[in-house]
Amino acid sequence: MIHARYLNTGGTEKFQAFLSDWHDTGNRPADPGLNSDQFSVEIDPGNSQCVIDESRIFSDRMDLGSYILDIAKNKCRIDFKDGEKLRGFFNWISYIYIDQLSQNGGQITRRNVDTGFPQYVYLQDFRRIYRHIVSTSVMIYHYYGSPLARIFLYSPVYEHNDLIEQTISRQRTYLNKGYVEALHILYWDGTRGKPKRGATSRDRPGTLRRFLAVTDQLSLTYYLAGMDGPGIISLLPEEFERWKS
Image (cartoon, rainbow, N blue to C red; front, side, top):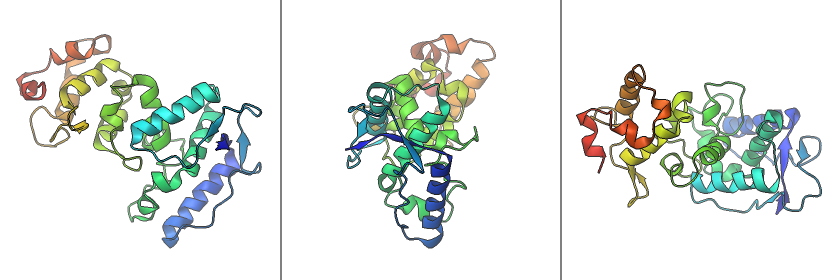
């Protein structure tokens, strides 16, 4: 177990340099030592509960999100309005679990990796914030809990899946529980423990992309933000019928 910390500005820059070196050389560099007081700050010193198990293996992003949320809110009592500390904490968590989150570096060394490594480093770029694996997993679980969060967090911790890419990047959808209830009803396969086959297809009727396009149109007439999942589904055209079962 290790006491929880958050990266300061220098620690975040050091972490980015570590990731960049890993990407450029194809080999994992020496550990950058971000647990030192030079690069990070201990959270709530003296609180013996504010610790994480750095050897923990996560089964999926749901497991990651629920575990880190419990540490942040209940054990370390981090104020979620303190953006600087929260971002630093999420970046520190990325550092601690970087081997898992990067598939042992496979996601870091690939040719088309995102500039700035937004999967692991919280960037001041709203368009890419949702790509941060730790923060997005935690906040989705925080907003929706179980079972609704599962529709987004079913995948391995290193994977940025299409449901997150298509929906969480849209703030209107992200913050609307009714939308997420509708997505869960339409596209979640409880037997398989993952979305229904073809749910994210580009060219089939009633898929996720069609849901987003249709609800965009419906929002011009109906106040969807005030509706629950079944209410939103009741407004959808016939092409969505096959997805209701």
